Image 1 (cartoon, rainbow, N blue to C red):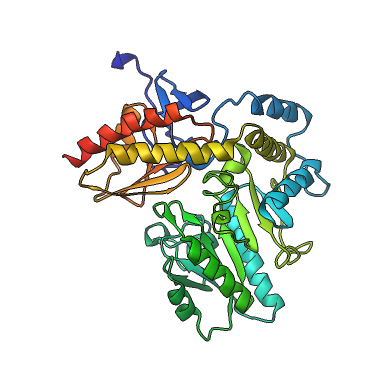
Image 2 (image 1 turned 135 degrees about the horizontal axis):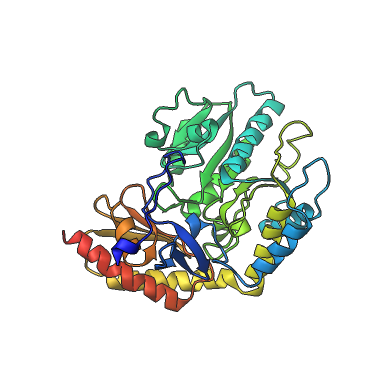
Length: 399
């Protein structure tokens, strides 16, 4: 049998990823198949990207229609679906204006530029931005500098200056780190840190930071690239705390797999950029905009926010029951369909073992198993995830 398997290799592709020896062929719903015909249950969704799963019957014809009409023009002209999608995002976030780009990194980079220009416009020559331990905002030089992971920064110095780093969920540490510093212009964080290990900001902390930003005239900038777009059961994860940011980068799930990014801004930040300050060739292209518009439409038609909350709770409960009393499972955390299982030891091998058992997931921060499945997942799918993962982790911990 194995002799007939097609070997998987990419000798001309730069070796930047620790890839599993699997090549994907196609998907349907929450399942994907590799080039050898093996089926997998997808609990990774392309790292929180495939909101509607694979081959969604409402999304596919809309994208086919758009591809036939126009894929790209450029931002010398108005793109009707940019305004449509911007309005949809503004209405659902309580913010007012949107800049479109193509990735989460670009959205975060734009947020950093907004914060710096905000400072310069106030006469601050060397603006500084508060960022967090264990944060991840991207791999450009600026977003890498904002990221709180020395491992991914190694070899790329000198990093960009102008960042003040603090621990999460500690308002006193934030006040202390910024005391008597007139150069601070913004606070920038993920509501739930993704790559850092599924670490949520507490609701009271979010409220306290919002109040501090108001008091000191700072921008509150919340990176919702991974935790936004319905993944926690609300459109944006910070909405559980009842706050509204000034700047909110989005990407990943916004286009259900079509590359897209957005920076959504409120009144305090919406008019900082003027013509010539920022731009992009691909951002806001007709195909990406159509993908965003249709994703939101389908999410609402199919009740996917409620589904994320309901199935996420079901999955978390199933995992908690399965690992009750198991030494080595430290914590199951997160919200909705963004869950992290922290073990008491590095567990990178789980990624391959799960794939061998027909389940796609990832391990982040060395010892946290990350589950970010499509928002169309059913309770039966959740039970299937637990049925594979629970015994697999038990066996791993028993070694």
